[in-house]
Length: 440
Picture 1 (cartoon, rainbow, N blue to C red):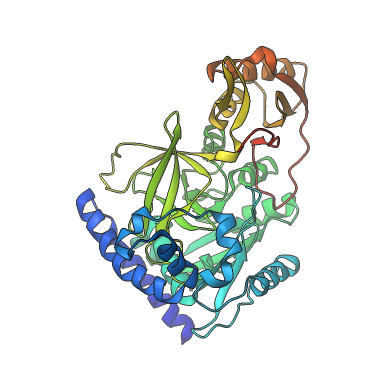
Picture 2: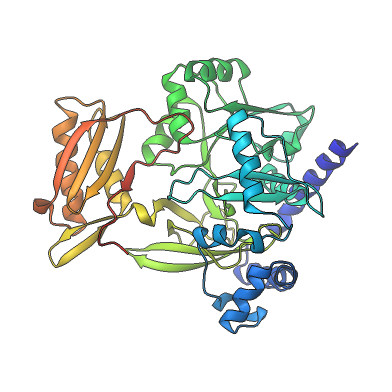
């Protein structure tokens, strides 16, 4: 009975989501204002950390857009007084890490308002994050995902749908809506690729969800599935990945998701839009058109996200052919701490990851790569395959990208070598700054 009620709740959220796909920007803003007023009153009354932030800033709740932002490190440091379920970070981490070790992701934590699901982010920015969601939040999240991702919703529910998701951890979020017509299969990324490829080919899912690097590896391992839709999650979706996945599997859309919440979803035309019906976004300009989001989740209550600064870099568009008012994301360009800091004509300059990724995409025969800044003027370029053709061409393209970005390529040492395989379950980062000297 409880499972049936859950499925009906999820379906109700999915159907209600249609009313929140605003086509008028002013109507969307009015909706956000209404949500924020009620939500922040509740959060400030139940989250001591959030209440203290307003008091310390001398701001009323109505001035929430002026609240100084907090980042993931600050959120984790204040977790015990930020969450509204009387949870302790040590308990959350213990349950989440035990689940990662045992690969059993069903355990929850009890709270006065019912059990909560817990999990860990992969910590690619140097700060692993914990997340907690209540049953109500989990069901609402599943409804939103169902509405935006299921091929042909709602008529798609009239036929059997097989959903395969390849993730590092199974938090049960996707399976919240499982039924006789919706079969969900979790494929553990820590299993051997040939096993995953064989299972995927046998299952023939209608919806395939996973990180693009893993999905490409499955193609190389012989996977022959033909889903109606491929959903890229967890990593930056680059043009070469999209092209390969569309050739091998089928149409590709992207979901923008993090520890901080469900941040972006595909529109009916397949383009990525910010999830502005549920999350308010402000932006900090960091140069060259790149924006760093500061978000306020208008629904999430167990682990409130109020004026939370992300480290991601976004490029936005002015509009979309679908007509939706939510802003379109042209590219999730990576993390700001992956931007390289190199010698330039008048000091040091920032080289955005996009420039390096574009350069490497010009190298014929290159299958995979990683570019790391290891010193003040040192770049390590790791290539697969490393051949007499890819090595010199990669170095040439990297130096051209540096010059286009304003860096002095003559001062930068570029060393090319072989690329070691990424360990299973580790998120791919193709461009990364390991050297932190002189960078705030």
